[in-house]
Amino acid sequence: MAKRCMLLRAPPGCNTNTRSEHSGHGSMFTGLVRAMGVVVCSGADVVSRSAGVPLWVASHVVSYGLRPGDSVSICGACMTVCRAVGPMIGACISYDSIRHLRMLRCGIATNVELPTAPSDLLHGTIASGHVVCTGKVMATRSDGGSVRLAMGVRRDDGRPIVHKGSIVVDGAALTAIGPELGGYGWTCSVNLVRATLLRCSLGTLMVGDDVNIEVPAS
Image (cartoon, rainbow, N blue to C red; front, side):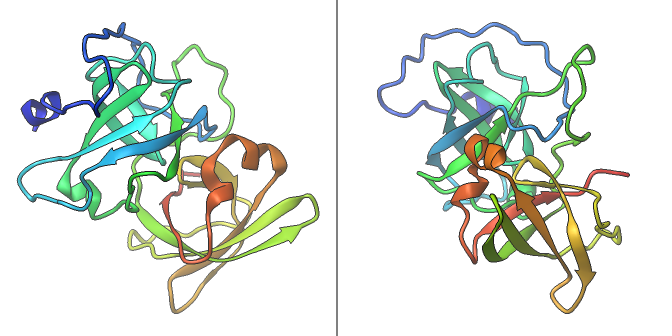
């Protein structure tokens, strides 16, 4: 697996001689999205049970300083960096992860966050980047100066979604509103304020879109 990751090729036009310095990050996230990126190359349409799926994301803000072996949260999922080339982040997704993550197709916007260092001031929540399931956007509506997003979430780990508890959606830490357990599984809403809409990709979601879900331990 590691050997295949290191053989990932950068998309045409990238300078593969670019070197990055070790960032020394851990693997805990806060759900405060550092920047948006764009999926520029994805092998998610050709999934092999015996090898990883290559993924390239362009993110000018967080890519510099990364090196192979570092962790990064892409769309809420903790991934290992296999290549870091200029603004490009190359990762390799295992087949097992593919079954639990939303499809990241070329051209879509995605949220990117670097791990939190022990010395950093902790904001947001404590997330591991281990996506437990996907949800589906069921409705969106304006709610004052924000947007209310209703989701259906299929969880099979037995843990509930708690009203006013934390929920991480595509890597963004939010507050669950009015969760209910029904036929689909859990349904709940989240409120997206203007600052959140400007800083992350959730504002691009439409009814029917899938999202990655993590429910941090309370």
